[in-house]
Length: 474
Image (cartoon, rainbow, N blue to C red):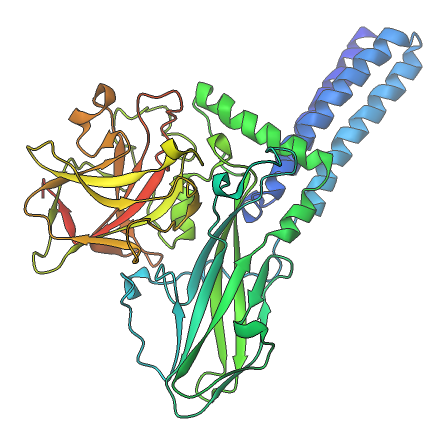
């Protein structure tokens, strides 16, 4: 009888293992948020069934009753895994094909001066990453997680609204008959003077169509207590992972949402125009709620390989990350002296929104200590993609360095010898476009704040795009 009882207990624990395996066999990468349920729920149910089994043996004296409870719990575990596997499906049903049209060539647009010579031109007023692609970010912040008395000037800014400028360079009026999104409940449109479709753009004039990322469909999805629990579990797992040097390959609380805005017009040459929407939804601000640098670069149209997510695989800034597109660089030099060095900020994910959170980008010449400011940002722009600088109308800093120069972001220098414990404070990666091309004389840099209580070696506190430079060792 003891042998049989032991076999039944083995069967019980095997049912938990099978439940987890079946649940995880779903294509989790297709839905980062839904993956949370498939990863954690089988473990939660498994733990609950263990507690129930122990209570059964503690309070029930009949072996037949205990056996019935055990077999019931086995069924619950197995059915949980099967249900999660069958019910799992991508959140977006009508989004773009990530391997098809969504993969664009970032080389078409390096600055705000991108020119269109067509009769009808569509311009991304952000100037990045491409005229056909908008990047938006929005931090949800669940009700009750912040004080309702926080004034607007102390609240995090979002980059959830971008305008598409439609230039009609022809001699005929352009009519935008209607517009639609690939998925409802995620984006909204607003057009000038509260007009409605069809929108008329007279000859040789323009109109702005603003796209706002609301994320309402996501917020409705996560309204239950279960989802709040899953979010907190994911947050805790990231913290635990740092201690054991493990990062979940999928699942996140800051997720990519890709979609399409389709404009139908009366233009004979190109009646249909598609605008691709690369959106980032974030559950809460700061700490381990933030998107990792790889996710940021993916959204911005790069195939650069960072090879880590929430922390640098336990390297802690001591070395380059193996098998990545990172390079060693202490100073840059100008590649083409007849053109300026261009630097654009792509992301900011650090403290927000006190005065001490205002960040800036400075440079200094090799062998000198004097620093000069290139870009300054508002303290409210601490949790967003494509933040706008304070001190410039344009989004790009342009300058002609006289010799090799280093960069300083917060307390981190490009030159490691100037950093806390001589660690890497700014990682440098090759800029690789979505079609796999290495962009010449172009690099991506990401910084971390070293030697502080919040140091976590994620290198996504401040991310920049630098063009017309070469490492000084080349």
